[in-house]
Length: 438
Image (cartoon, rainbow, N blue to C red; front, top):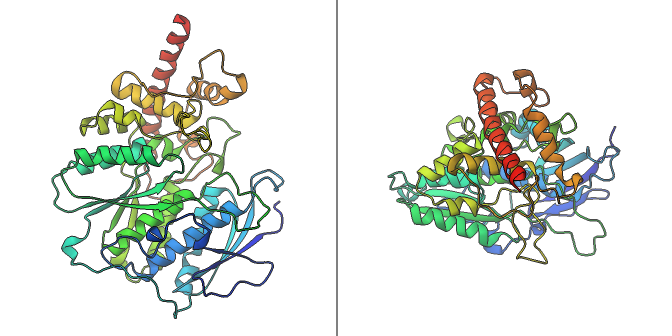
């Protein structure tokens, strides 16, 4: 069971009336963002259609509600009941899309969501982008986080002989901006085609005088990322958005029965993308205007992604400068801290991928899980990984806690998991050699 729903209402613009109590107001003002990077002032070569504005507004409302609602108050310290009202230009279309949207949100956050749609105030005037000829539009759009996977895809596409721009959409990680910039500059140096970059904030702040703390988990941020890229693609008439994530972590099978559902990130899982594309198909003005979100690395392991970046000409030190950690050490008070904890599952997969591509991983980690000086409670992922690698993995395990969409090919996905498990086994074996020789 869950407690009474937390009630939120999104204000589309400053002049919109505040909701009646007990509804809490949410708005773009909550995002820690410079005016130049606000959603209606980004450097796009054409205005986005209304449906894409609506999609981005819904995602920003969801993310803000996610951050405002603590999981600690729930009976299981996780599952919340959130009710959200958002203004959109076509409420009827959004109501048709609601089954896809609620399934998507349940998958990525593990919560119970009730979304209501009301008409957007048509008198609101949005900021408008300058309109250029279609020959100026970008040819491709992709998310670019500064991680290994997005770097591998950007490096590959940047080296294709295309005269049209590659548009990379980034969300700033607070305290890691310089790292993200350095990785982007490495792609720039390799690129043989024009590059453009859109940056946006994912930092939500508490209203002045608020006494509550923001929720630390951010399971809905993948939706925030993807919809910003869809918005840009729709503005510049690009039919596909690439969200690069290796198949291992896109599927992200739980290492143990204790980590099921949204306790393991599902932002690029095939089931998630299926429902996101389902939402888009319902809300677009015409089928030809639809934008499809795809994962170009769905059948790649982490090591194969690293090899892609290597073969695109990126030096090993650039790959090692990326950010992959799921629990990076807090750097707010000490920017000199290392970017990777070295102990979480994404760090372990990263280690195995770099070792596969280069035979070694020279990334400086805050800790090594095989180090006997590391406290046992900090080695939970390492122990769970070794147990998981010693256990057979079947198609039933693949779909145990998250379904696959109708067009999925389970055999191909199972092959990705198995190749990834071999990379991880090789990393574990190397770690054992290091420990024996110490």
